[in-house]
Image (cartoon, rainbow, N blue to C red; front, side, top):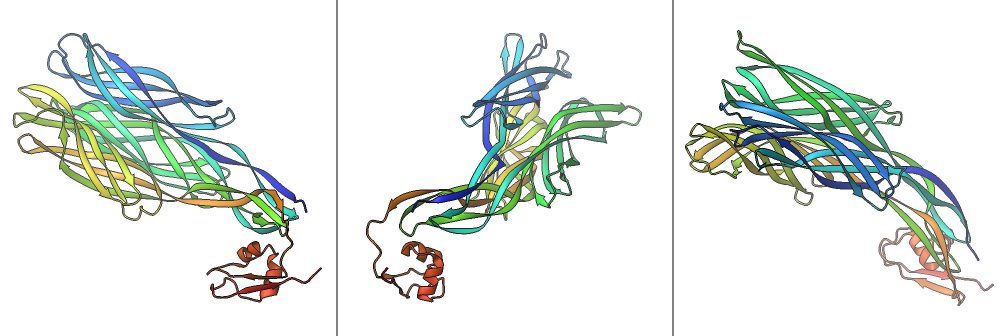
Length: 492
């Protein structure tokens, strides 16, 4: 008997791709004669478009690079240059109707001398999440086959975007000027409900200031919160959200009479994120034929369902690796632009990485800088059970020499871990008919079950409807494994 199935087709949104691309962007500085070294470089990235075409994502951005140096008179000075860039990332599954979200980060900034100029090369990392419409089809009825129906949870992704303005002002004693700044935004909570997405987090601001003519590092943690309108965010749930600083500016107003400096900070944040809508539908989850072979096409969907965002505050310390050779003739001045690179192991729950920063020091009356790295290893309690998206910010870096040639550092880490529970659903998308049975069934069939045998698995092995198996054997399912199921078939 041929199989005639009925189907239900519906549209939903899924995450089509998660891409990573890297590009190099250069800025050229000309300071004139007398400048032999660039002490520090502070890159600031801003996305400027992301479009999806067939098999490719084209994206662009703007880089504003601030360089700090000592002029011919030995005084600290700064210069700023900007550059626009475009790049791409390829994937076979990309299509023009899809939507892409772009996050730009600076992986590395290096300085080299080219004649009388200095060339700053910034390696820009682009993380791109692509979402698009898709269709799913599942069997709702089938004639000629025995189907197992059940309530199946089906998910559809919902994306949201938004922005926010953040302002802060604070006093800094004895500060004469602000040379450069670095900042990073970290999301500490994101919840849906009532037609909006509520995002909260912190901006970690690191300043290189002048205090009595000497460089000094200042740190500031600035909280932020925002409500993003989203009509689909009706039920309470968690969401995964990314915050990036699109524009940031720092202005200093010095009151020489009071010896105080008021620092005004303003930034514009861009948000993008996603959560999942859930609904239940009655669909076939398995099928077989009583008079032949049946090949049900089982479709599987798996999504990372955000369950929680955990925040960890850690203090790390130890010996750090420094490129320059330091001794007691060196006076350590300031640690600038601290960033954390880390790798998380779900099996052990350990987060391992390093805090990278630029160390400014003086030797024999001349100011120099060098790259430094503080390795760390942190146990994230309660995060090893699920998949985690890890982000980390650093502030309050202090450096000292306890022994000549050995540099020790201490820093404060703020770590956020997005816990995602892998959630899967299965349903029969189609039923393919196999070969018919050649031999008729036996008059008596004895089934030796295994422990935990269910009524459905027994019926599938016997090629009988489950209700007939239940009436014939009268056993209680699931079975223990020591029973015997005897089926008598009357002669027709």
